[in-house]
Image 1: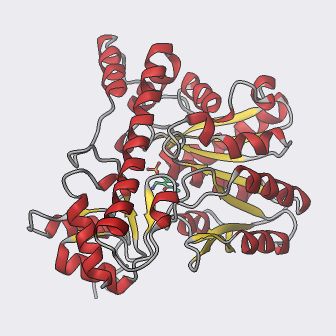
Image 2 (image 1 turned 180 degrees about the horizontal axis):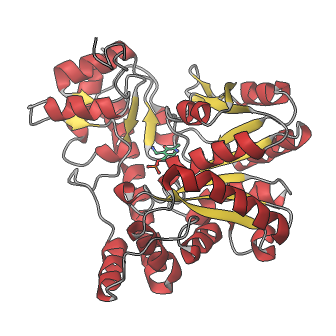
Image 3 (image 1 turned 180 degrees about the vertical axis):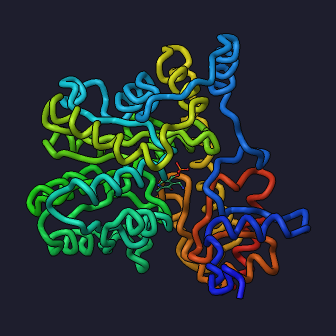
Amino acid sequence: ASTWSAVPAGPPDPILGVTEAYKADKDPRKINLGVGAYRDEHGKPYVLPSVKEAEARLSALKPDKEYLPITGLAEFTQNAALLAYGADSEPLKQGSISVTQSISGTGALRIGGAFLARHYPNSKIIYLPVPSWGNHTPIFRDSGLEVRGYRYFDKKTVGLDFEGLKADLLAAPEQSIVLLHACAHNPTGVDPTQEQWAQISDIVKERKLFPFFDMAYQGFASGSTSHDAFAVRHFVSEGHHIALAQSFAKNMGLYGERVGAFSLTTTDPDEKARVNSQLKIVIRPTYSNPPLHGARIANKILGDKALYTQWESEVKGMADRIISMREKLYSALTHDLKTPGEWGHIKSQIGMFSFTGLTPPQTKALAEKAHVYMTADGRISMAGLNGGNIEYFAESVDAAVK
Ligand code: PMP
């Protein structure tokens, strides 16, 4: 037998598999609402003008291609922490936030998982919302943590199951780790309100849980980076020590550049230095040091007042276009087509995704009959809709549910 004859075929990735099917479809009306990448009003990938400008300025400097340090471009990581924690953050002012560059959000989550598995002394259990981004479970399982779930989404109301969430966090063993989506929850598009975040913070305190925030969409949810950082900043101001994974894939459109950061708030600069030394020991044998180009771009934008202002308005432009698609889809379904069912959640959900409530057979029919592709759980990327395809999409949904 050959060496690999016993290797079983693994299942295709549930999200990236949707794109494969879309690419193979030859119908001109086809729509891909599977992958979470922003598309402009013509359905095309969008390179932010602020990113183009930052790249032009960088290339004029003819920079070298030397290795970065293990924890990445120091100026970038400081700017990333400032963006997330805000200038008023106590641990930031005290210099007690340990931060490293990461291979986008995924890499940040993985560094965090590996660091907690090795050094968090109190528990090896991490609670994820049900449902959560599909990659969370394998990331934390492969990091050496035990993955459990807390209730999050209520299918009946297509909203937050806040009672279930509170009950499950109250019942979790003390000092367990809890993963929280900072904003624009993926896949549901359902976020806690600010009052609910305050209650979650109280429960986390009462049960001595360790909060790990995944912030992959800062600015993308509301159009304002500080508004979207509310949960993170509230927890820090309440005295929690947190872990934070940041991604610049969505808010800067730097998907393939793999720009992110992982940080931990610590008690003082000495503790920070020790934590930092251990982050390096996690990273060095994994990928040695992070990529250079994207971090330089993000750093140019974050570090230059005019470019930063321009970028914030471009983030808002993306968020606003998505919000306008929510309104158009809602009104097409409820007013124009009188599609059976309640569609208010399309408008109230937040961020890139909408959990439509479409069932697996309906999503299958949409792909086969209408050439419309989405994940089997009925999640659609709102950014895949535009003036040119939204009517066809609404009609296809209408046909699928009737
Ligand atoms: N967390 C969540 C919730 C996400 O939706 C994503 C992107 N789909 C990520 C993390 C990480 O993405 P990336 O590694 O591309 O930054």
